[in-house]
Image 1 (cartoon, one colour):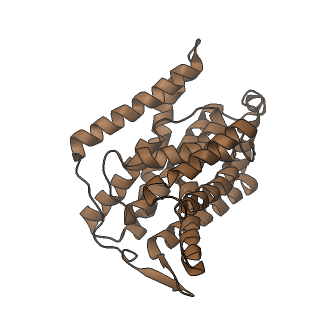
Image 2: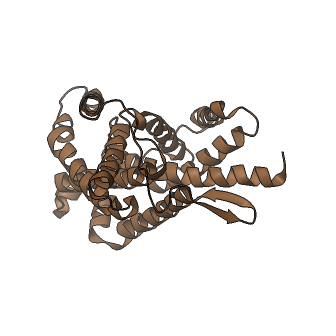
Length: 292
C-alpha cells in the first residue's frame, strides 16, 4: 500500500472521528449533568435524520439550510423527554439507577416501534444536496464534501459549546449543576430548569449530528443503533461526563477504525476500536480524560 493511500485512509478516519464526536457529545453532556445514560440516544439520532429527510422532501430546500430547523425541533423534544419521562424516573426512591435505565430504554423501544409503524422499514435517502456526490482534492487526497462539512460542523459545535459553558450565565449554571446539584439550589438556580435545558441542548446536538449524517447516509428505523454503539464507546473512552473528552475520543475512534482497515478487511474495522476500548477499561476505567 502506498503512502498516499495510507494518508487517504487516515484523513477519512479523522473526518469520521469528528462526526463520531458530534454524535457522542450530547450523550456525554447529559450524563455529566445528571448521571443518567440516555439509552434512547440512537433513536433520537434516527428521529433527527427523519426530520432532516422529511423537511427536505416537503420543502425541497437543501438539507444544509434545514439543519437549524432540525436542531430546534430536537431541542424541544429533548426538553419534553426530560419533563415527561426522565424527571419522574429520577424521583424513584429505590433502584433509581435501574429505573432511569429502563425508562430511557423503554423510550428507545417505543420510538423505534413508532418509526417502524409510521415510516416502514424502507431505506430512504436525500436525493439531492449541494454536497452530495462532491469530493475535494487536497494534494491528491480525495475527501467527500459531506464528511468535510460534517467535520467542520463538529468543530464549530464544540467551539460554540466551549463559549456557551465559559462565557454565558447559563453555561456557568450548567457547570455548577454538574459539580453539585444540591448546592445550586442554595444560590437560586432552578435545577429542574437547568436539567430540561440541558436535555434540550444535548438533543439539539444530536439533531445537528443527524442533520449532517442524513446528507450522506441512508435513513431507516434502525439507523441509530450502530451510531449509538460507537457513541457509547466514545463517551466511555473519553471519560463519562467529559464533554471535550468526547471530541478527543471521537477523533481517536475514527483514526483507530481507519487504521484497522489497513490490517483487516473493512467489514472488521470496529475490532480495533473495541480492543482499544477494552484496554482503556482495564487500565483506566474513568476514561482517558476523566470528567471535565
